[in-house]
Each structure stands twice: as structure tokens, then as C-alpha cells.
Length: 356
Image 1: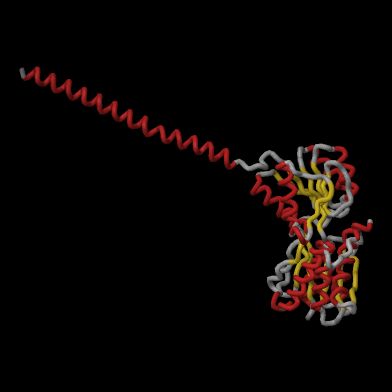
Image 2: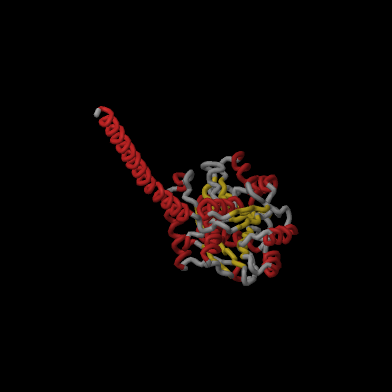
């Protein structure tokens, strides 16, 4: 009898262990289901986080002043880096040493599968027309150049508008009645800036004397400093440059000169000599470059002229972080009034591009 009871107890224990094991397995299986669900959600999240520009390759061909110009090359490259971060495109920059290298640089990029090539140089016009015809499936962007092609977009910045504002501010600020201008090469783009700068100064006061110096290069800071000192010696106490790296010489000069101020160009240069760079006549190239890349990706790239002006914030003066107090509320209000007049057309600014 005792043996029978022992056998029955052993069998009961065995059944109980099997049942418990079965329940444990069932629980583990049930717990695995949410893990599978989580994995599926993770896959969906990964798919959703794929960036729209992945698989696209875009390149910047810098002008002769190259990166580090603290001007439009650096600003355009900033736009490319933003596009890489936010859109997922692959980016590359090429810095040709001479205009003669533009054709080989652009051709090599097209052969390497880059779908968009953006060039900042004002000497790019002939090259972009030539190379774009050889690679009809590649999109080309030129900045303020006269180039044509079914796959060529021209980013036309209203340099005449910001040149006019720079001239107006210079005329408001001068204590000597004389202001200066330093250009790079005397080409169509530079003449456009210079013409508007003179107009803006004369708009404020017809008696303003405007001195102009052409450095003949965009990558010669020593020449920029030489001309800045010369203009200051002739009485110019506000000097505007549009000369790329050559303009860095102006910033060196104003650090040595009392009561002489600069106006920068293309990319915010106010910080270079705080309190002595009144403002910068900005092309918002970081925005423009990003916009062109985004158009490539979403299929809205448009050949021909694409205008970026005061009305769409393609260009403008900086917020004058370091010089607001120096300039004063009355002059700032006057600048706003002039800007509004340019936008609504009541103030006419000569655009020499339209005359060519």
C-alpha cells in the first residue's frame, strides 16, 4: 500500500512538472510576440527615416578664390553640407586653380555620376554652355552668368539691389563725404555691383564722392589691403568690397585705420572686425544652393533664370549685430524705407545685366 501511494505521488509530481514546463514555454512564446512587433515597428521607422536625397550625388565647383574666402564659396558649401545632413545627398567640392581647369573639372564630375554641378565663378559662362551640351542628363547651375542650355539653371541674385543698399548706408555713415569700392576683376557681375553702389550713395546725397579701385583678382588679400589704404588716404572712410579673398585685405586695413569702416559681401562678414564692418551685402547662397539641390530631388529643377532678390529673401543686408548702435535707429529706419521702395518699384535701381 505504501509503495502504491509513493508511485501515485511520483506520477502526480511528474504531471505537475510537465504542466509547469508547458506554461513556461507558452509564456515565453507570448512574450516573444511583442518583440516581433517591435522589430516590425523598427523596420518601419528605418524606412520612414530614409532621406529623400539618398543616392543623389551633387558637386560644387568653387571660383578661383576657393574655400576659405569667407564669402560666396564658403556660403555655397554651407548649403551643400546642409543638404547632406538634411537630405542625405553625397557632396563633393572641386577648387580649380584656373578658368582653364573648369572644363576638365566639370567633365570629370559628370563622368563620375554627379547629377547636379553648381559653379560659383563668374567666369564659368562659356564652360557651362560647353559642358552642359555634352552631358544632357546632368543638371548644371551657374551663379549670375549668361549661359544657356536645356539642363542649365542660372541662379540670378539681385546684387544690384544689395549694392544700392550698401551705397546708401555708406553715404549715410561717411563723415568725409567720400566712400570707396574695391572690386575684383572688372567683369559684368562686378560692374553690376559697382554701378548700384554708386547709385545708392548718390540717392542719399548727390554730393557723395565715390572712389573705385579694381584689384584685378579675387584671391589677393595683399592687393586688397594696398587698395584699401590708398582709398582711405584719399579720404574714403567707408569702403565696400566685392572682391572675394582679395577683400580680406580690406579687413586687415581697417584694423590699422581710425574711423574707417568696411562693408562686406556675399556671406556674413560682420564678425571679422566686430564694430568696424558696418554690414554685409549678402547673397544667401547657403539657401540658394540647398534650394537647387532640393529641386533636383523633388523634380522641380527649372532651366533658365531663377531670381533671388530682396522680395524672396534671396539677398539682403545682415542684421548688423555689432553696429546697430553705431548706425542708429534713424539710419536703420531709412534703410528699411529704401528697401521697401526697391521691392515695390518706387525706387529704380539699374541692373546692368538687363542692359547686356
